[in-house]
Image 1 (cartoon, rainbow, N blue to C red):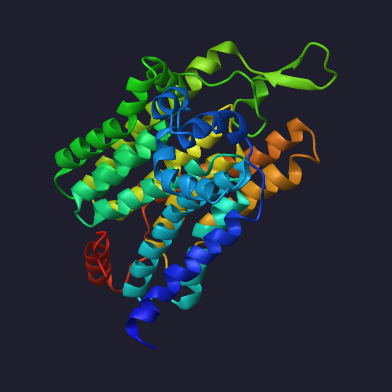
Image 2 (image 1 turned 90 degrees about the vertical axis):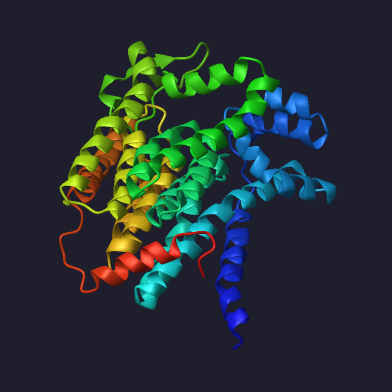
Length: 406
């Protein structure tokens, strides 16, 4: 088989898999209300109105725009236009899968391990329902965060900052990745931070200008305030109070008002001491720079556990960060990432409609809290088992983390 054909085989296979998975459901979830009004304006050529009406994750639409316009030009329905944009977001985990496969090849990992990593990158967002829930941009931002860490490991600070800034523009929670990306970089961290800030500003500025102060307030509120309605799958469920909407016989749940103002700042604030602890462990050579991926996975899982509005697709970024870490440090299957996907799907899809909210909360915390503890151990203790080829691993990571590596 010609070499160029062999090199194209995996990207083509990943693209076909992404298309099939994206089009496996016609549900659009929150996008019908949150995204469609602004996208309709964009497709009609009203750019200013689009910028003013776009949701908090409006910059992610810029990534999807070529796909949205192509589908619309072909006479596609709204659902098909949405799925075309979702496919654009799915290209990010495909890129992550390709990068990781390159590392695994360099480390001579077994084919079964390589196949499992590729499948987690593709099937994780699908099983955790990011697109059917209307938020494929969650997959996009999560993959970009993991890729930014991988690029930083290869001493490409400018590229790492560019990718990190793009992730932050797409989703404000990507600020959680700033510490891990900086700690993964061996040098030129100031440049990385400057490029990340400039990129995020470039992505967000048109929306701030187009909507006046509204988009800026939305971004700040998204980081600062969470809705008071409670989902069972989160740490604060014991503080719930049952409420009935007027004229409804179906109960809902709310939590203390203070949590609406504390939960999101707490998630962001925790990233600072945890990143500081990782930096201290790194200086003592207790962990390696590649373990910044485990730190990223920990911060993203804490976001799930501590957010009263926790949804199934919140888990996608944590899974992508974890599978990247396991691909670099373990010779076997990415069992942790596989377990997170399976437990997330079991809890949110299989159990949620079948058991009471209290039982659901207990089931969720029964695995989420131990998973958080295990990720903390991975982030701050690293992998103790000696690698027979430590120099080869370091060289492979450094040589193959830049976008231009072959």
